[in-house]
Length: 210
Length: 210
Length: 210
Image 1 (cartoon, helix red, strand yellow):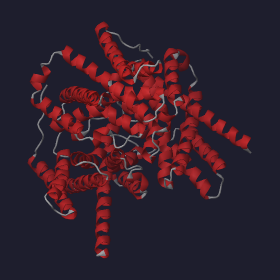
Image 2 (cartoon, each protein chain N blue to C red):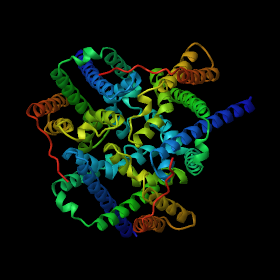
Image 3 (tube, rainbow over the protein chains, first blue to last red):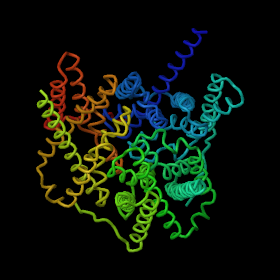
Image 4 (cartoon, rainbow over the protein chains, first blue to last red):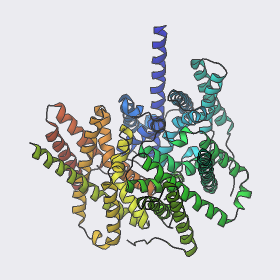
């Protein structure tokens, strides 16, 4: 039993670090496209990967945020920024589909982790779903603010919607009596699938013309 | 006595929800003008209405902020964003003067509520006035940051100034021995009046040309 | 002994207020160049001078932040903004080198104070260095966000790098057995020197062309 628990924790940690890494690399690429210098690239890597979790932790009162308490996260993102900067021609050669799939996996993971942590801190269900969504998309929002542009997530694409749907699925599954582990898996799968299906079919949210 | 207290609480809650609603609808309209999609419109509604209070609560250490603890506020703002999006031609038909008056009322209410809450959390008078001002204008500032433009409140108009004047009046009236209730009413009236008079007469703060 | 301690505290307070003042005046000048009105100028003065410390305090869980708890800091920055606005032709006449040196001194002071406070709140060394850097450059970042532009510190110049180097030097010196006082002085000197040498020689961080 104890060994299984240890294994689960290792898997969750590995998945979390992997998601962080993907978001950090993507952040570094946007920063380079925006003309930032090496330091700017490293800062955007940090912010894009950990900003969502930091905002969630500040809002639910879990201070200092995890990204500040556990030095492995900032070190990982700064290293990712540095390596993406140095080997940018290699990184740019990564297939777009691979990046898309890894990004969707990171989003799913962050959304599920975010809703779980909010519940743990006694946040009510509806707001916990918002916290899951913020965990998934908050880093990208801060990245876009620092690059002085309207956050991509507010303009197009089923992205935050997928994160919210994943967070919703976790809570709905639990309410229907599912155990926390399977509910988390289901929620992650729901977010991941919706995101990829939306990209494949070119789904967008409606806009109103004023 | 108890019934009167209940009544006062109901009035304050109703006024607070009304102010939140006005700010959410105005936020939704700016978001649509900025070309955001449905999700972006709902997010900006939330941020414009509740952002000021969230910033105040984070700064005075009242975590989790009220907008996170009480699910009615986020639900109200998301619904307001959704309905403004769907019925935008109707909403745009609202008379400009009505919007202006309701907005001034919302500003007055938020400024007074903000200074009261700061005092309750042991913040000293001058900073409490700043917290009242932040409660009134912070949502609009975050809205403008997300729309990648310089916050309107920093550029022109007697708006933050009216909020500060209202917060100042609350504390001045209390210092002169007025009871909290009448002092709050006086402060709200001061903010509301200054805002509307400033708009009528086209008052602006000075600018320096560099 | 007691008198010496008192003297040190007075010196630290005086230095802190001086650093705050320089950052506030520089913030006011950027705000005027950005076309803001008097209120906008005063807000940017506040934000540019105190924003870094506020972000640090929120992240390490020291709420309410010092800038909110101690009314002297906001009053000082608002006054600095007001006076810079009124006497802007005089202020613009200050020699650029003087501003540069005072700014470097402010940066050094903030970076050292930031790392010390983070350590005091039990933050681990690597993240404490980040907190020192954030204290030094965070105000400028928020100022640039409010002026709707990409933060200067992410684009060019050895500035955040100097703050990080200063914070690093404090911790390295302590680890090597130096007493806190001399270690702080050494770290401040390291930041100050690197900043000025970098400006003199036109050093920049590398950029990657994508």
